[in-house]
Image: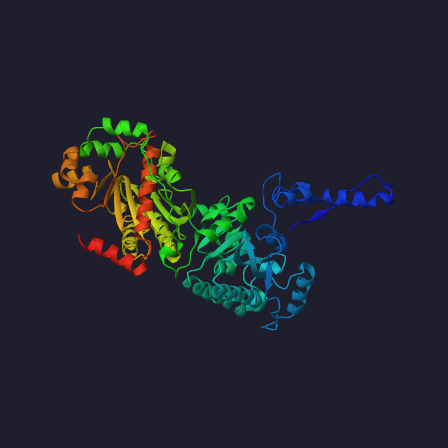
Length: 573
C-alpha cells in the first residue's frame, strides 16, 4: 500500500501561473516510505519499476486495477458478479458500516474482483484479492464470487488464475466465512475434473483460511518474492510456542525450499509466465493426437562423433560401471537444454520440501509440451552435496508423482531421465516413508493414461531407479547400467566379499546390451565413443530425433490404450 508523503518546498513564492507544470513535477516527486527498508523513495520511480522499491527490491502491495494492467491485454478485462448483494449473516454490530466504508475508500465491490481477460491473446479467468478491503478477508461474498467464477470457467473451458492475498477468514461472519473454504475447494475440484488449469499466485500476505483452501490448491502455485505465506501468522505462532522464529520464516523463499510452491516469479516475468502456463496445459478430453504437431528434422552425427565412434573399443561391464560414475559425465540437465526448446522447472512435493536430487518441470519439443522428470547428481562437490549425489528422498519421488499426475490431467507425455545409484538410505528417509513413496510411484505410473518414455543415461540402481522408470518404452545409453543393486552390494550379499565387485558386474547382466538381449529395454542410445562434453550435443540431438519418433508412434492413441500397452509390457516379464 502506498503511503503518499509530499515534498515540502521552502520557496513560498511560486507563482500560481506555474501551477500546471509544477503540479506534474510535484506529483512525480512525491515520496513514499518503503515498508521493508524504511527509506523515502520516489513514487514515480517505484510505479515505473512495477511497484518495486528500487533501493531494496521489496514488493509493494498492488491495487486491483494495477494488477489487471500488469497481466491483462489492454481493454480486455470484463468484470463479473459485482451485483452480488452483501449482508450481515450473523447480525454483527457495525459490520454494514465497515463494509460501506471499505467500498467507499477502495472503490471496490468486495475484497476480490473476478472476471475474464486475454493474456497475450489467450482467454483466461482471473481473480484478484485486494488487501485494502478489510485485509482481503474471506466472507460469503468473496467465496461466492470465486466459486461462481470457477464454475463459469469450467463451463467455458477456461484456465483460472487467482492472485491471492488475505488476512484469512472474516471474523464478522464467523462460521459462514469458514464454510467458504469448503465451497471454493469443491468448485476447484470440479474444474480440475474437467481437465482445466487452476493456478494461484501468492502475494503478500496470504494467510489463514485462504491459505488453507483456494490459495494452496493450484495445479501450479507460484509466489512473488518475499511474500508472507502461512496458515497461522508469525505473531500468533511466536506467542503460542514462546520461541524466536527462524530468519525468513513463512516467506515465499521458505515455502519454495520446503516444497510447497512451484516457483517464485518476478513481476517483470509474470505475464509471460501466465501465458506459458496457458500454452503448456491441455484439455483432458482430447486425444494425444489432437495436440501433437510433428516437427520434421533429421539428425546427422558430427564429424568428431563419427571419428570417435570408429576409434572406440567395447567396454567391459566394470569399465561401464566406472564410466557412469564419473562426475564429468553429462547429466540430464545437459541433455535437456539441447533437446527441449524451453524447460521450466517446478518445485516441491507440497508436503515436506523440494528434493534437488530429482527435478521436474515442463518442456517444449517444438510445439509439443511434455513433462520432464530427471535424476541429477551434481558436478561440483558442493552441488553433489546439495543434490545428495543424485539419491532421492521420499519427497523427491512424491514430487515426481505429483508432476506425472498433473501431466496425465493435462494430457502431456512424460519423459523421464534416470541416473541414480539408488534411493537414499538414511534414518530421515525411513521416517518419511521411502518404501511407500517408491511403491506408490510404481502403482500410479503403471496406470498413467499418457505416453511415458524412460531413458537411463547413467547408473540405474535398484528400486530407486525403477520408481521413475515404469514406461511404455525404456531406453539406455550405450554405456549405462541398470541393476538390482550395485555390484559391491551384490558381491557383499551373495559372496560376503564386496571387493569382488568387478567380478560381480560381469555376471549380473547390467549393461544396455545385456538388457536389450533380455527384452528389458527397447533401444540403445549411441555415445559415439563415450559421453562427455565433446559428444554431449550430438547424443542429445540423436535423443531428440528418437523422442520425436516415440511421440509420433502414440499419435492418435487414447489413454486406456496407452495404459494397457504399458501393463502388457511389464506383464511379459
